[in-house]
Amino acid sequence: MTDDTQRRGLIADLTRRLALASHDELRVVDRVLQRLEQLRFTWLRRGPTSPNDIDTRWHLSARVANGAIVTRCHGRWAEHDMVTCVDSPPVTERCLACQRAAWSDSASDLDPLIAAVLEQLAADDLATANLRDAARAEMLGEDG
Image (cartoon, rainbow, N blue to C red; front, top):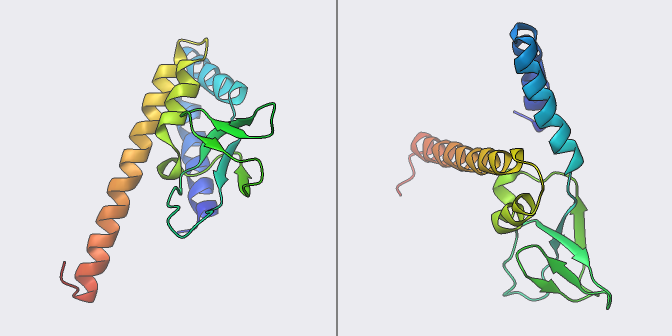
């Protein structure tokens, strides 16, 4: 199933569920969405600089005065390193240390809850991927 199909299905399900929600429940959802919009981060992933460079995670980062890039998890990249930028990478590919640091520095009481939910989504996605891989291996008769 493509990401677009999954997204459209989730929107349809949320639309149905929101229609059934009370006014106060809608206010809760509105407040969480408002906070997510306020803290919509830009994520960077550094291109490999050698065959041994294995960091494939997306990091929250910023350029510092000398042009270097510093990540929220205290990593540092040279200014000439190639980077890719996205607004919202899959949660399973994010650096959770960067994500936790960003949410813990925030001023809202909602932020720890949002961070915990994002970590739970990452764990759920990983479990689903593992089940899918196991089912594929079983169907193909692979040992392992």
